[in-house]
Amino acid sequence: MTAERLDQPRELRRTLRPHYDPEAFGRLSERIARFLGTARFIVYMTVFVAVWVIWNTAAPAGLKFDPYPFIFLTLMLSLQASYAAPLILLAQNRQDDRDRIQYEHDREAADRNRAEIEYLTREIAGLRMAVNEVATRDYLRAELSRLLEELQDADVKERRRPVR
Image (cartoon, rainbow, N blue to C red; front, side, top):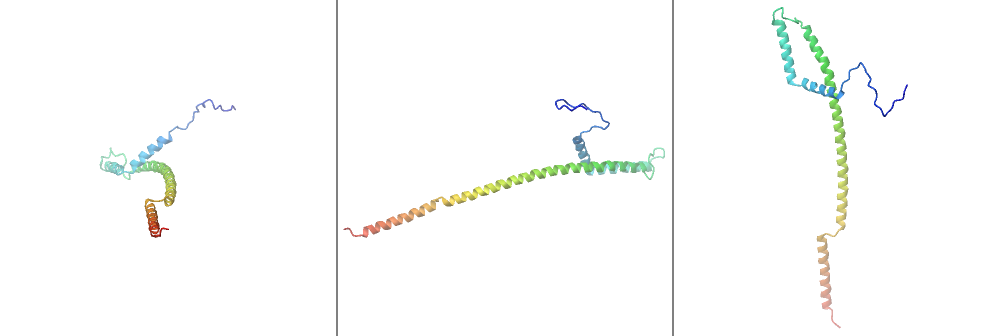
């Protein structure tokens, strides 16, 4: 037994299993499942079954290929259903995976938004506290008016005081 060398590609191994691209197969199954879930498919299937039944009941005896009770039609519909169900389940699983990934992205975005909102809330609170400590224009006017009144009162008192 030789050790595998990581600097060289592996030799191709021949297997009896067919090789398929799971992603391509998944996309195909979604397309089929999407078609099976349409009114168009129901109309096509109804027309197909109606033509089958009418042909095998009204056609001359030599042209009938599936006489009543339509065993071959039953076999065909069973075969179609046996393939449709797993394809629909595969498509649903792929959709569930996409939904899960989208949910995770949405949750991460919501967490980022929540963190940003909390940060902005703290910043606004800090600004409000800082603004409360800063003298506002109205506060300065009121203080200047008060000081002016005190100066005027002091000036009036100074004028009333007798000069010695």
